[in-house]
Image 1 (cartoon, helix red, strand yellow):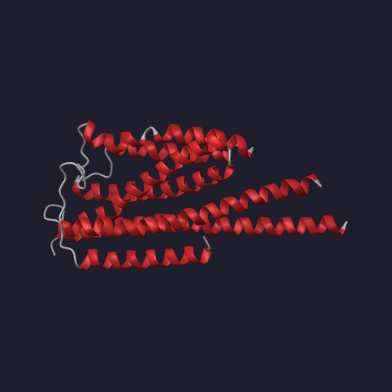
Image 2: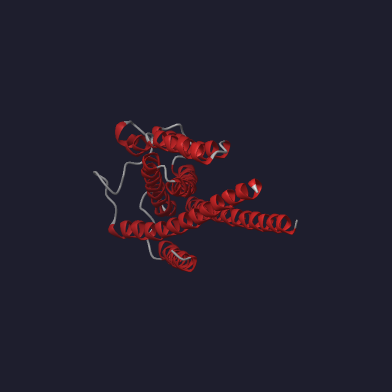
Length: 225
Length: 54
C-alpha cells in the first residue's frame, strides 16, 4: 500500500476521532453512577480490543514464521506487537485514571489488572529479546517462540473477570452486560478509527522494518567487498 | 458544577490526554526511527562512493 494512502487513512482516522471526542463530550449524557469519567471507556475498551487483536495477529504471524521461515512474517510480527503494546499502555494508563476516581486508588493487585500488566510486560520482553539477538534468523525463531508463549496469558487476561472475583467491572458488551445503545454506538464508533490508526502505524512500522533489513543486508555486502 | 463533578471532569481530561500522549509518543518514536534509517542509508552511500573512488 502506498505511503500516501496510509497517511490519508491516518488523516481520516484523526478526523473521526476528533468528531467522536466532540460528540462524547457535548452530545452524550453523563453516566448515572460514574458521571463524566465514564467516557474513558470509549478509549479504554477499544484500546484493549485493538491491543488483543494485535497480539492475536502476532501469534498467527509468529507461528507462520516458524512454519515458513520467511522473515517477512517476522517483520510483520514485530510491527504488530509494537503497536499492540502502545494500545496496551493506553488501556492500562486510562484504566488507572478511571480507577483513581471510581475506586479512590490508582492501582490494585486485582486479577484483571495484574494479568494485563504481566501480559504487557511479556510482550515488552519480546522487544527486549529481539534487541539482544544480532543474527536475524535466530532472532526471528526465538522471538516467534516468545510470541507463542506470551499469547498464552491473553485468554487469562480476557476471562479473568469471569473466573475470579475481581474489582474490575464485568463486561458490558457480551454476556450479561448491558449498555445504553448510544454509549454502545460511541464505543464501536471510536474503535473503528482506532483500528484504522493501528493499521496505519503497523504499516509504517512494517515498511521501516523492511527497509532496515535491506539496509543491514546492503551493509554486510559492502563490508564483504 | 460541584467539586466531585469538577474533579470527575479533570480526571477525564487526564485520561484523554494520557491516551493521546501515548499514541503521540509512539508516532514520535516511528519518526525518529525513520530519521535513523535515513542517516544509515546516507552513510552507506558515502561508504560505497569512497570505496568506488579508491
